[in-house]
Image (tube, rainbow, N blue to C red; front, side):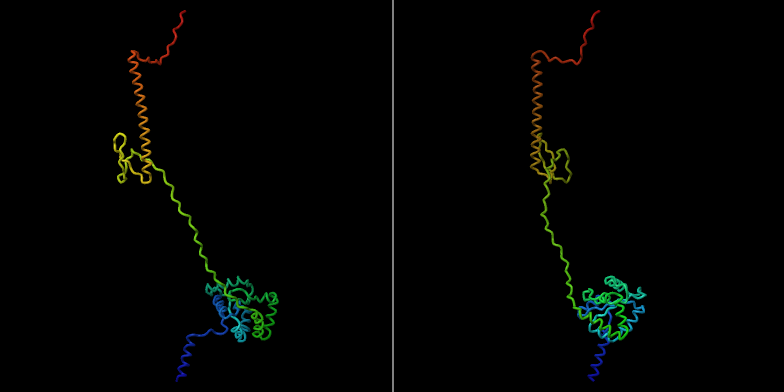
Length: 286
């Protein structure tokens, strides 16, 4: 009874969690690289047109055979890059990935195979390793003549033995830009004091100060918050001094004129007034 129960549990787990089948071909390059990094095996990438007769022949005689699949399960990570006739039926992401891989590795003829490492870098180009396309085709035809799975795995094994798993590439973290040292902020230059206009009437909300002038008046002088009140007082004192000096000079001049008139009056003669008229000479008698 216990054995039957254990068997039922095993079958249930096997149905719910199917294992990765031997000889499974990846189609996602990133997943293939992850598997290669995990197992230390190279990625065998097959570029193929599944609708072409040559590709179908290789698939039937080599890639679907047990000998090849058993060998690949121990030594390779398999990946197919397909370009079918109805390529528009492929998902967009798969089409873009396959086109990028084809351009990256310079594939011009299919079927073609490569060995690639876990970082996505080329390890073996079989065409170049065989000395060109003609020699590669000749070798492949010889493989296809007798026991293709066995002879092809022996052919592959010569390249796989030279493979060494690369160290994973270090992902460089983006460096944050260094903060530039900021220059100390300059204080704005002080604006020169502006002389307030004593004749202007300040606005209703403008603060004012009462400054008595020389005549005893009390004009309202608006305060300038950006100016210097001491500067204003100095300028005002200078203006008052200049005005007083000018007034004294004019007063002395008037006094001088009055004194001249009084002196001429006392002498009994007034200063002759010059006439603007020009006297012409009398005409000569005949």
